[in-house]
Length: 330
Image (tube, rainbow, N blue to C red; front, side, top):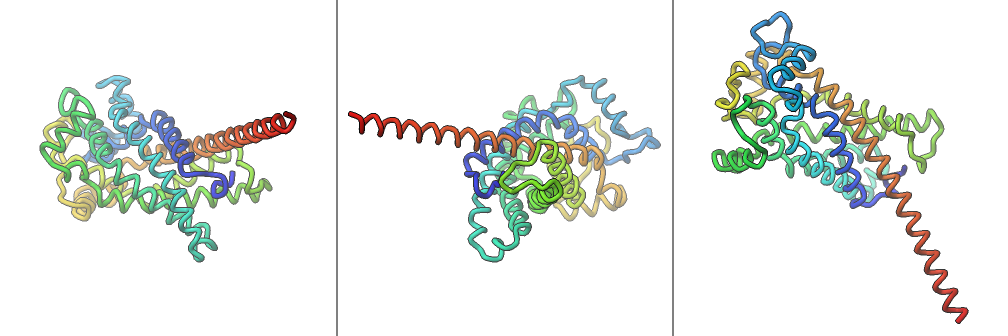
């Protein structure tokens, strides 16, 4: 569907929130593994027997054995709230930014550039709103069983009490630096791949791509962008657990850093350049599936909302005509 012509920011927000809710539930287990990998200082390798987590398969079995099936949805409540708020904020603001930038001659001519800038701005806006939920989610996933926070609400209260507003916004720098090109790239690549599919299958811009094509476009967009910004995501997670060492004593050596640049430097120094890509495999799987589901569900729902509104408008017009005719006859 031609989003630029048919969408309103409110419809986009509703569709984005719904897509975020469904996608988060499906992809949460991959997120749990990714975060556990990112926060482990020891190498991720089968050869290093002292490392708690070594491979995806071994880690999946270990988490299940030690913590049960529910552990794969640890931090799901704040993550779910985060996803809904993030989806509403991102997609509704994207449409508003898109509408504004279309009045600028340069962006009107260059659609890919406009998609990137709108995606970057909307992603940054949504990230600033939801970052405290991301901080508490990361800590819930990384804490020892029986230690730390009992719930996301308690976690938010304790972080604010002991660390202040700064604690709730730990990792803001790398979050913004990561999310701006990430979401900008996602929207840009998604539209580029969508245009390629339309040309190849001879589908007009007014028609919606089939669900499988939407899924593929979203997956490819997520994969391309995640590869580009992954070290910043790693730095963000490491910063978010600073001051939380007492609640995660069974996860190996605690990583210490002061800021984003110090974090990246220490990772490269202590764990080697490859350490900057710890947890990349589950992260790519998550990014691919999450982006695929996100955009596919978003576009499908938006199309259904548009069809429903069109039918309702037609019914209302028919009722008005019937009333006018009835009055004319009397």
